[in-house]
Length: 279
Image (cartoon, rainbow, N blue to C red):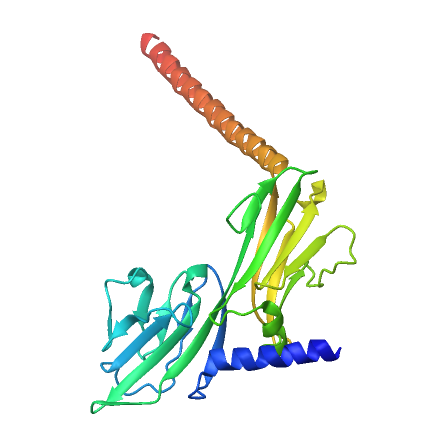
């Protein structure tokens, strides 16, 4: 126990140096799931954004990328189309991807003098599976599927350090919101101490069609973001297709019969008219 506490203390010191450096700046943590939209606040916003800059670092020692310069988007950035500046100088990012995680800095100038920066550490939660990269998978009963849930973060370090320092944790829960544990014989749940990743492996059953499993990230025991993964049975999909074809055929048959009866009535009226003329 003493060894664990000692290691946790070392991790705390290490992450503290990563996040605050020597200047002791305050950092806002933002958690978001891939595919969602996010707005990063610039707390020191002025009456307009003409002096606003948004800077980005993917890693601690990576090159700084200027996303917004003097209130205007930089067109040479990969995310140009997904970025926009809010009326309060916040940075809006559409359709977040796992590559968007990192350290964002809002910087403003007044009469040529730099004001205090605002710092945002953006964490991105992303889920994938061994059979599909989307948020749902089609698989037959009896086959095994593994779901991967990872939290992408700027600071690096091990996930154990994050748990000690900021109490950030990942969980898998079922549709009822009940946490899945290693004691459940149906699921194999593994976590990595090198990266914030947790996997769930299970063998699918027939009743798993439309079943959802959700990965949640908590910060200081508060759920900050989650991603839901849905299972679609390939057998159910085929039955749905057959039912759809049958419905289309039934509608076509009804319409065809209606047209035939209408044509028959028209010919009957024509025959009656001719008979009256000859009489």
